Image (cartoon, one colour):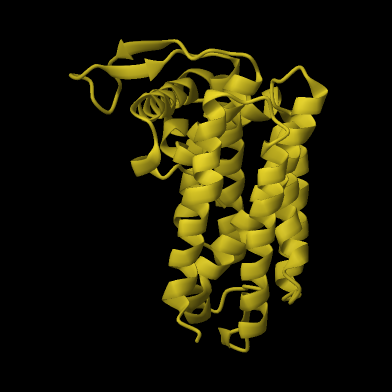
Length: 280
C-alpha cells in the first residue's frame, strides 16, 4: 500500500532533512516502546512523513536528542523523543503492517505472511486496543477489496476507494483537536489514498500479469491501455485535490515538507512508473 510517500530529498532544506531522519528514528523507537520490538520491522518512511505533518497540526514539537539504537548500538544519532504523534503513527504502522500481511496471505498465499503475522501479533493487539474502531474500519475495507478482487472488478474507482477510506480514517483519528484542521487533513490523505492505490497498481502491472494476480489495469493477461491512461489522469486529479486540501491546513515548516511530496516527489514517481510501461 505504501512506499511512495517520501520527499524529494535533494530539494529539502538541511534542517528539514535532519528533522525527517530524526522523526524516522524516533518512530522506530516508538514502535518498540508502544507496540513490540518485532513491530520495528514494519517501519516505513511513509509514516515518518505523516508524523512530520501530523505533529505540526497537533501542535507538538519534536524534541530531538542523541541516542543509540538496536540497529546501531555503538553510534548515537539524532532521534525524536516519543510523543502523542509518534505513538499514534506507531500504532497505525502496526495495524497497516499486520493487515497487509493478512491481505497477502488471502490474495497470494505468500508463505512468509503467517510468519510475519505471528511476529507482529503482540504489537498488533496493543495497537488494536488503542485504535479499535480504526482497525475495524481498516479490516472492513480490506474485506470489500477482496470482494472486488474475487469478481475481477474492471472499474478501478471501487478498489481505489477502499485505500482512500483507510487513509481518510488515519486523518479522522489523528490526535488533532481542531475539527476543521482534521477534516482538511482527512481530505488530503483520502486523495493521496486514491493516488497510492493507482500508483501501486500501475507499478505492479508487469508482475501481476506474470503471476496472474488481480489488477484493474490489466485485462486478459495484458495491460489494459484504456484503464491505464484513465488511471494516469485520475492520479493527476487526485494530487490536485490533495494540494487544495493542503492549502486549508495551518502549516509552516511542515507545509514546505508536504509541498515537496505533492509537487515534486509523487509526480516524479508517477513519471517513473508510467515510463517503464512504454505503452506508446
